[in-house]
Image 1 (cartoon, rainbow over the protein chains, first blue to last red):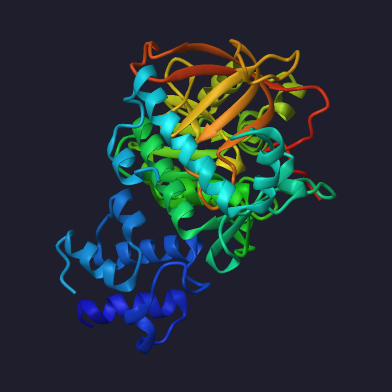
Image 2 (cartoon, rainbow over the protein chains, first blue to last red):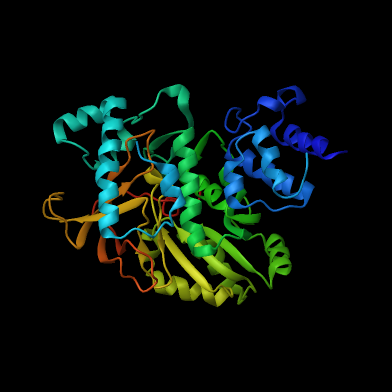
Length: 78
Length: 348
C-alpha cells in the first residue's frame, strides 16, 4: 500500500466514509468526524506513519485535504 | 470584531493591567453589540438591565441562549447535572468551538510545555459515549486530550481502577514525564483512595491537571493541600495543578500556577462583587465571582455571574512571572445549586 492508500484507508475505516467522498470531507461536516472521531483519526495516522503531530496541527487538521498538507511537514509525502 | 488570530499569537499571560483594560474596553463593547443584534432573549435583557449585564449561570438552564442560526450549531454542550436537575445548554458553532480548543491548548501548554506527553485520564471511556450531547466532563477530557498522546483511561465502565491498563501504562512510561488529567473528586475517590488502601505508589512522573469543583471534597474535609499531598503520596508526580472554569466559558480556563494561585489569562477576566448588593459599580477584593471571557460568539456567555465566592490576591505581580490577575476560590454561596464536573457525579 502506498502512503495515499494508507491515508485514505484510515479515513474510510474510522469515519466510515466512501472513497468518493474523501476529497470534500471536512471536520464537523459529518457526524462521525466530531471531536471523538478526530482524536481517533489522529491517533491512527500517527500510528500508520510513525509520526507525532504538534497540538497546533491537530487543531488545524480541518479537512481531508488540509491533513495531507500538514502530514507533509513531518516528512511523509502523500 | 475581536482579532482572535492576533490574540492567539500572544503569550497568554503577557498583558499587564493597562494593556488588558484597553483590549477589554473595545472587545466587550464589540461582543455585547454582537449578541444584542443576534440573540433576542439577550436583547430583551439588555433593554431592561443595560449594556453587557452579567448573566446568572442559571439562565442557561431556563433559556436557549443562542446568537447564531440553528444550522450553524455544530455542538451542544451540557453541564453535568445530576439526574432531575435541569442542565445548561451551550450552543457552539464551528468558530467558537475551534477558538475554545485553541485557547485551552494555549493556556495549558504554558504549564505543560509544547511536547505532547503520554496521557493518563482518570475517568472512564464511557463518558464519551453519547457523542451528540456532550457533557462538560466529556468535553473537558477531549479538550485536554489534544495536549497528550497515547490517551489511556484509568477507570473501567464501573468507575473501578483498571489495574491491567494502569500496570502496562506504568511499565511503558515509568521513566518519562506524563500528563495526568481528571476531575478533582473522582481522582480522589476512584484513584487516590484505592491506591492508598493498597499502599501502592505508582512510578508516574510529570504533572496532574484537575478541575471540576471542591464541594464534595470539602464535605469530607479534603482541601487543596491535603489533595496535593495525597496525590504525591501515591504517585511520583512533580506538579499537581488545579484549574477553575465552567462549561459556559469553556476554553478560557483559570490555571493554578506553581505557587498555588489561579490565574486569568488574556482571554478571560475575573471580578469580585460585594455580597451586600452584588453591584457591579465598584468591585471588591473579596466577593461573588463575575467571569468574563472573550471567546463566546455563538451564545451570549461572555459575562457571567457565578455562584462562587473568591478573593483577588494580586495583579501582574505573582512570583511565577505570569501577568494578569491571580486569585483564590472559597466555594459556593449558600443556597447555590450543585454543579460541576466532579461534584455532580453520582453512582446509579
